[in-house]
Image (cartoon, rainbow, N blue to C red; front, side, top):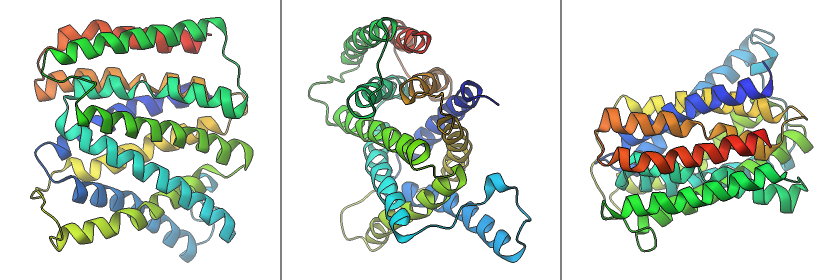
Length: 298
């Protein structure tokens, strides 16, 4: 499987992940959703590590994490911290925003990643990629107009800023992924395993505080979508990390193509959650996707 096919597979499961996240956090407490979904992903890797310890060679090498130094563990702990910050912003935002609005905003991540790739990694966009970015920006403005018709004004809605902040941390995480996998040559299962486990370090204290009612909080309702968040993300991240391991895969292009997940999330938001004004948002969503495609073709 080449890196483009791997990225498309990742996009499909990111769309499913967004739908599961919206289903899990809608009218629900966010903190236990974050913790339990993370615990699900970490448990999968705990089981795989245990199986490898009991029966060495039982698992495929593509599922076996490498032995790490303390410095390498700290590097992956930092990865988990960045992801945790991104998830806090996006989960709380998706609880309060329509998915048909939230998913296109998150699609801005490739543009932020491209800027970082230019400034930090020295990647150089083509004229077509720059044109794609301009179309994406214009479509984002159109999306803000559509959102205002639902009473969501981008410049003063705190949940929009939560989502933008989460998306920004997501772009930082993508750049760091390329550094870990492309420059430092971490293996895919190593990054995926330990970043999932270390996420518990960040979310467990908040889950405990929620359980002890240390602050005013909402009640939690169990839903099947909570563990499905982690399962969809495991598949999406494995394919995504595999794509980044390819030396020919530019992080800016991988992130652009991965945002095709917007189609899945947008359509799912309209179909499953009966969100309003979908057709009014559709031109802006199509514009964002056209910008993504132009960026890819560039």
